[in-house]
Image (cartoon, rainbow, N blue to C red):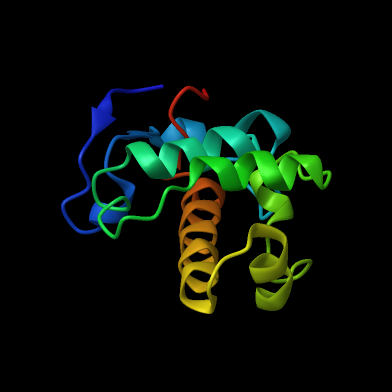
Length: 123
């Protein structure tokens, strides 16, 4: 892949790898396993991202809790499969934190699907 880039239009995705046009020519709505971050790596990433870690939420433990429930990849954490109440109950969090998590899931899955980025450490 190419170099690390700062996306000045969407600071939520700082530090992700930008893909070249040839990398995205055959993408689909399905996320290949190799591009789909592990649930634990993704929650750890949220804690390390300066833009997403401004509200005092520690995300890393959530990845481990979800892994214990059988979640292995980010794509499983979708509104299609999981409700806000489920996330609240499973993680012991407030509704607003659950919404924030789903917002980040949606943003990152769309960025991966569109071929604009690769999760750090994935190529």
